[in-house]
Image 1 (cartoon, rainbow, N blue to C red):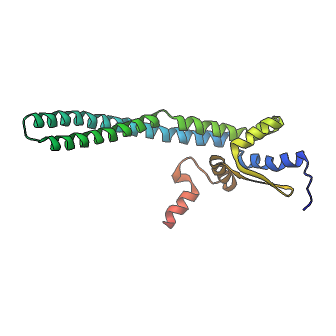
Image 2 (image 1 turned 90 degrees about the horizontal axis):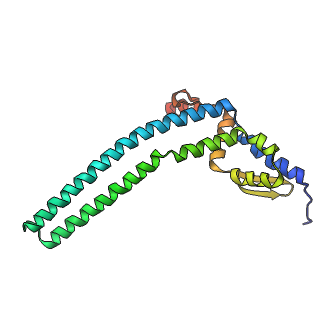
Image 3 (image 1 turned 135 degrees about the horizontal axis):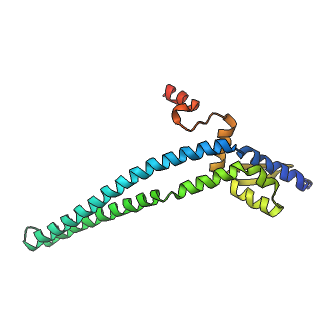
Length: 192
């Protein structure tokens, strides 16, 4: 097979189509952002309640450990029974501590910041693409594409997951901020 010549402009045009796929309007980005913020607030409230429940469970385990030790000292438990009980208490303490750490991570909203930056990128995608140097365009493509390749004179790629979701939303144009107003959701619920 002979080597093919593909000019640089044709390559950039091919990859530029990926940018067109993820472009969303500022109004749409605002609606998505508002929906994410509402969801985050609900999650935040639930996690605060979870953290308090885990804290209470840990306090209860401290009391249980004290009681177990007292039973051992009083001869109610032998050494093997005491060790079994203490091991069980420590496992439960580890379990609730892990849950508390995960709940604290949900509170920080890092995913929300990531989502906001993805929305900002999608809103300004075309402008960013057109104003960048060749090196910056390549870096931009690394953020939004996986598996870019040249097949003959055509470029092939897969959008990375958050951008693939945006492209699908843009393609069907049916997304709404509340599930109840989303026509696709209503159809899926009616079928279920």
